[in-house]
Image (cartoon, rainbow, N blue to C red; front, side):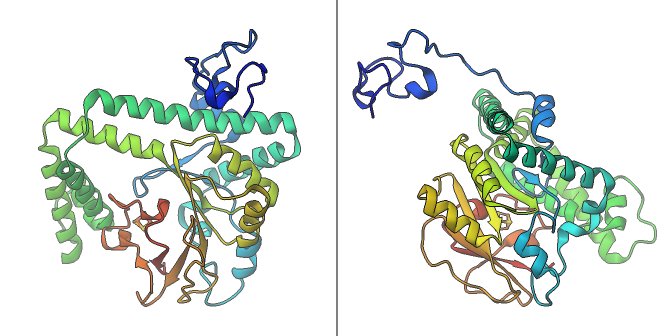
Length: 342
Ligand code: SF4
């Protein structure tokens, strides 16, 4: 690769900046002074890209778009019995709340604007990537300052969270301090064991609890999911989100999708997927478990009504629906991951 100053070949460049002049600016170029990018605030991020979704159940953040409208294949499957999209979770529960729907609509508007205008596209990509990178740098610095927590402390935290998520309304009322009154025995049991798990975690030394919090914040910044609702609705959008993925090489991205043709086209036109992305092509039918054809990072996921699968079963459903310390969806050790139907 030739340096644009015409005086260096970047691979052999011995300058302090090394060969990443494109990022930092070669010392030989008078105008190419490296300017450290300003961290992007969440207010700025929201102004340009919309908001992100963070939940306690998943380790990282995610981007959410309106379901069906942005799901070309999913919209067709939604009308077909025996498909995972027939009872789409992204059309129920909290996804029906007006504030969630309007946030999704706003993100979709920004994405369409980024596709239509080159100037806005650059701003959208640099703001998205800049915000994610900044969050990770901040979280990593906090872990470096406090130190890593013991595995046992993390396990106690996850056990307390799982115990909480196993509770129904009665169990949660007991967990919040209400006296057991007329709950069914199962809820009373769940509420009391959630209290016990919380107390065990709370008994850790304060510095260790701070370390746990910092480690959780690090994972929140490190792992990212496209999308918790919606899909890659067009090739132009695929190119757009891939630019964010390439510009955030220290994050690990997971893209579950029904849009296999769009992924295939991107690979055909751009080459292999970035190393920090795992794509999982979703099976279009419940209880059908296609294994991926290659062992690169285009993998698979499926849904099972029986628990039978040639792949690995997602363990979240044995622990109150939380991922805990599992990050399998983001990595390629498990070519096929199967989720119980819900
Ligand atoms: S397989 Fe692991 S990472 Fe994926 S959803 Fe289940 S618990 Fe979470």
